[in-house]
Image (cartoon, rainbow, N blue to C red):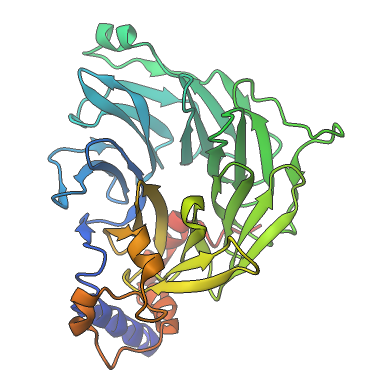
Length: 394
């Protein structure tokens, strides 16, 4: 290990020992890198872990439930359905093993069905809010539509889970891996896709046909607006938000495809979360910092920074008055939206009850990004590059 790697490793270990970071955001310790998560009912979340498992977590007790849905590769994405099995909400987990597994949240070892069809790692999932449809994106450059089995089918095959085949495959449009899918929450008619080719495309959420604008031109944002990999997308009523390794998060007008808001960062942006009711957008970056942007008036500006994670942020999700963040440091953290927006103690968010834990000798935030990768062995760096896909050669 080089001297630079040793120095970065020492810095990362120092951050992990920081008593403030050990408390900030009430961290839930997953015991493995968290690559993605989904929020469920009854204060539950489902975690996608690098340890080849998906696990259920209790957000109230900050404990992991016993048992796990097991794959033969890292679990890269999870989603929750608006339906249940024997009184338990149903989860989906997608993996490097090219499969998607369906299982009850209260009994993750029990596989209800296996979705099979992708020829490479499954990278992302999306669920239709009202129809029995699930969508997946893969390193094989395809998007697949899946019809969920009826409850009676699951009950009839309780000993041998059925294999589900896709009802629609979209291939040949994206020229790179599919990293993110999101569906319009208002009309639920449009599915957006993006990935390593840095383009953004739109599809009919029921048929898979390409969406066309009023002038009959296909809805399409080409590479160039984003310069490289796009890792995340979220859509609100009239704005599509994307997060990219080109160090920007962009808010697009879904009608005109214009980049209305561009949030520039000093590091790769891995996750984006619009919170329109508060007039803010949260972004999570390489190195672990979370930025809170005010976007509801004038030029966007950072109003808050959260220095809690000690490694790359991987996912941001909101529910009610809270939002949640996960990272490669193996923690899931909880944030009160109003508390962060109304905070008057400066740019860096540190609740008053934790102020006494602040380390006066803390180094600048830029060191976080430096520590994140260089502290790893060569083998671990390759693994991290695969997990985050931020070194994909276009």
